[in-house]
Image (tube, rainbow, N blue to C red; front, side):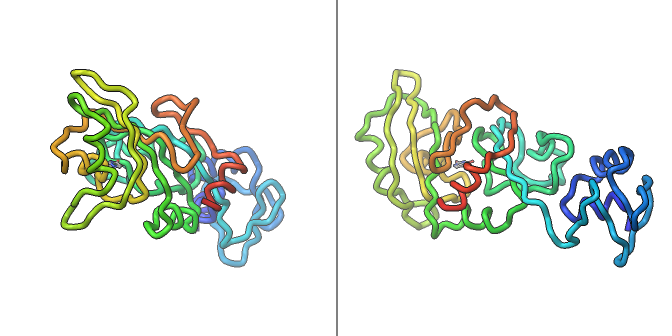
Length: 234
Ligand code: URA
């Protein structure tokens, strides 16, 4: 196997970044500096920065993205649309989005290669609270939100109780903060559609207490150790 693929498969770096590491002389095979395009086999000893590589160990990586609209939440798209992967910094390992935000929805998205955390955060049994800012067409009252709070029927199933309150309302639109613990396809949009309302704009602003404040649209940063620990306990 080519050394750059080997390093990528072991979660060290993307192939391109692995090539840069090889070119910089940071990679050794059997005690000698590796060269670009070289092959490695099962029995070869590979060192990166003079440290051995656990062949099965993948370095866990965790990112927080402020997803813009018009970008799809998959690793690749057969229709050639822009994916969230294209917004990740050079050298990012093989991470994947945790859950989905639909094409037109913006906001907080976690990307990681930690399958356990991803499973935890997306398993509906864990009822992880996710908060959205929804801009709804027309005026609304708090009373109008009661149906949303107590549950609306989507595909014959009642949505779970949720929190929702108005942050601004006028003739043209109403801004609502809504916190749901489910993650159905286009769930927030469909909940408002179920009460005859049109969602003009939708942005996820929190998962638990984790927010995207400080991140502009399209920006990405690594999660801090504290944030990772927090998410693992959520
Ligand atoms: N609800 C939606 O309607 N869309 C999303 O992307 C997430 C929640």
